[in-house]
Length: 323
Image 1 (tube, rainbow, N blue to C red):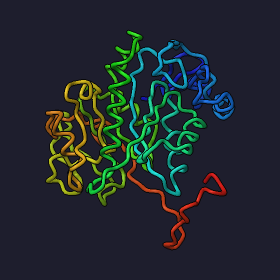
Image 2 (image 1 turned 45 degrees about the horizontal axis):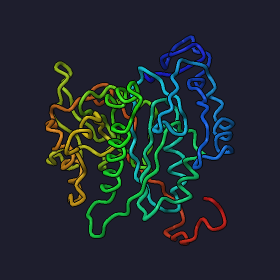
Image 3 (image 1 turned 180 degrees about the vertical axis):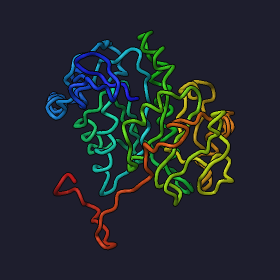
Image 4 (image 1 turned 30 degrees about the vertical axis):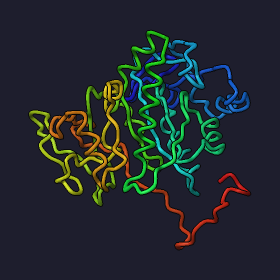
């Protein structure tokens, strides 16, 4: 169950005595630096009244805790790597993504733009979000690749290594080293309970992805007696690992080793996940089946559609409005 933080301390989702379904996080006050304006910090508090409960937390001067300087000991860290690129629905998709992952403490969102530089637009969306911890990076996709997003995800992995290896707060570094990583497409849909499943991952874990692979859900099949994966219900089940990127998470130790597990930019279409997961040395049958033995859906492989009857938006779509 999702650990929620309330004025009564730590409670669990579903607590019959909880007075509020939304009063579960603290507005983490922090001093604003050059990339986060005071107005943005005030806006974060004004637009997030559900983050006003009191609970046990720890303050740190760590540079990795941005924009909030507070974290919750005992709650596993989740690093969410989200590639993004300029398009008419980008702000919409990022807003929806951030709104979900801002609902929990100890989540570090790493946004990596497919761009030659970090853009002011994405920086603004991040600043205006209620995310407690985030990083903003960029890398332009190389020409001729079959699958986009691999270089951005790798940049996110290097960011995780940088965060962990440069952490000087001993307690925080230890907590980071037991964290889990997730690769989130910016236009997918997520239930905040995906964080519950991610925090259960001890090595590599998997769960269903709704509306993926031309199926109601792509998922693993589990022997209810042994709790072991026996197969997969997915598109092209003969793939080395028939799992969508949104359908797995892994312990950060896979990225702290030398060399780290990385995505292969030269992977062929539909081979990206398999090429990546093979490096963990965990067979597809030894992955941890989560979400009630892969029977619950907390993420959906979708895309945002604007119903313009095939008409393309202008290239300067945000010149007049910050759409």
